[in-house]
Image 1 (cartoon, rainbow, N blue to C red):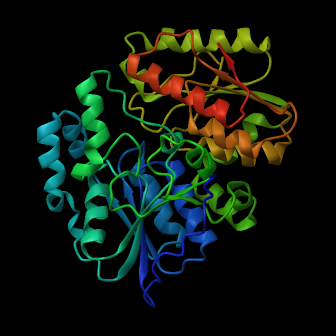
Image 2: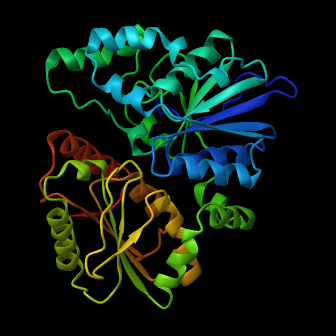
Image 3: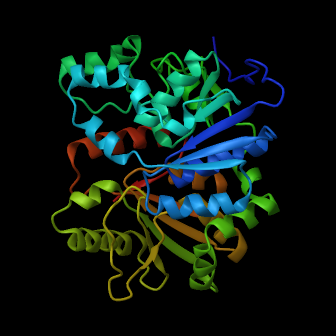
Length: 384
């Protein structure tokens, strides 16, 4: 029997009740905005958590957009870093005391009917989920990236694998995002990838997003809004003007831990030149928003794209300037799935996955799982 993602009728919202969104990354903001637009939601608030570069400045721009009734900016990165260092037993009690993790501004949720969060393992988001559920209100998850489609546990010891598997039964986040029982639905671009995986415990929660990502970005008011939120787009316009081919390297947070970061970047550039055979078209390096350290442009060999810019917004640039070919290099990224779907025309996009560079074991595990996911999504790519 083949399962299908169905529209989520769920509970009826109370008349006049508000909807709360929570995001920790720029791409998640686009997903939250898409749901608001696609469901034609009126009164909505959004929480922006400080898990990405210049999150505070971004929250100011979001507030100035006047799209949301209220915009809250919350700092909790230290709390989440503390949680990551805990063992299984201490982590259990950490999550059980979720009320201590709840931001005071969200202690009273009487005005809200529903919450949309991007994760169930981030401390503040977990507390919000539990708070809504304890009040009999709906909590849903929305797509945060390709992590929604894979098992994110990187444990290698059998007892840790077992603990991660049974964690949702204990009220703790598991290897699959949204596995805690208080999440009622998970809104995704590609729910079919979950429905087709019999090992995935989230199959009955998967829902289609209310609007296709391409249709959302092609709305004139959304494109205008994106250019206001990300004025850097106008700078990129100037850099690509007159170009037919561009190459983009997507980096990863583990780059912060590399002892010779400049040397590693040069290795990536060498792979780009070798794979494309093109030393004339511009090369752009797009850092992950979770990276803490900056990468300096190397004597004009490449240009730096802003960390906080969602890579998916390159689609606006590609369409506007009629870019004929995009060469995309990555260790495995949500942007590959999204740009592939957005730019799906013959020979308009080549995808390369870094495989021969030195990778930490946990990064290698996730990269390999991404490659498996890409194959299931019928995406052609080359290992370099």
